[in-house]
Image (tube, chains in turn orange, green):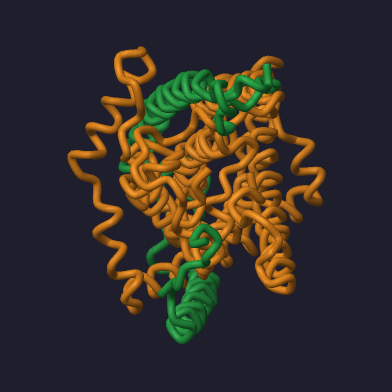
Length: 334
Length: 130
């Protein structure tokens, strides 16, 4: 296969992505152990109770602000960053890509639009830096992370809460607002894990976000291909079962946190009196835990992506030492 | 062969990365220090609410109901956004799930023999493997 699919991002970007992922996962685990405490009480216990959880949330919160400002400043001061602004603007191609994806799903189109394609293969040249989903992710995450960081800072201290919100109910309402905001990202990240973990050509993880462009050959043999070449790849034997189970888990997780967010608002008092403030529903408890499991798998896949990068680097070093006689570079990471 | 050559990549300059990292960490620390220092300006607090009702008296507002009606609206708005975007994300999940299944169908199935071997004389590609 072509390696062009993998070589999209610089090392700074791939490192940033891994750090941001780790940080956001920890923020999710700590924050939703508080908001969905009825369902995720064990997660709070695991992180050392209420004190431990808020410590984790605060430390990762500071790290998030550092990461946000690092990225914004870098995009503004560096030519590479500035040249990327064009790449993230949505265009007509992205709308077309979404429509064509629907047609592809219904069997009315033979292939995915270049702006939707995760596997570019021989036609990787047609594929932009970010797919329409990628652009959406960048926009939604930017808005969400900004609002979450600002609202998080406003509820940082108790005296601040007292001064800013005057009443306990208003303070609780604002904390609830902060938690509800994050639900959009929580659901989006579950989808993100599914999207980049279960693509049949990349299963179990798309290495694009982990192996930097500088380590991936940019050219491939076939000069004038008619297809992406996906038909030449062999499907993993476990893909069918695993993608079905993981897809179901993703859907259950998203639906559950969505329903949970409606009930578990804790403001100003729960609408129906129940221990802990939410419906003590077994199905919802199982569902939200499945959602957290999806995120946990995402964290593991992110680490696995980095393991693949390390292995790939080691293999490249090995080949350099043996003078490039080691064989085809292009088959190692799939 | 050109296949194995690694590209020259003009990525981010080290100096830019360092400057951004320093600014990021500085802003993070400053913002937390700033948020830490949020203090109660007592004159602006509703400390005394004259009257004899349940929500009156010293410090009454802190235990009374929501004094910022805009928050009610914000919460309603976010509830709506959660549900609407949640449904849209579900659409995207199913869209990708279906697309992945179609793509998987185009791929070689596990255990299927390779057919792009060069044909032998008088044979056809992959013919020798059957």
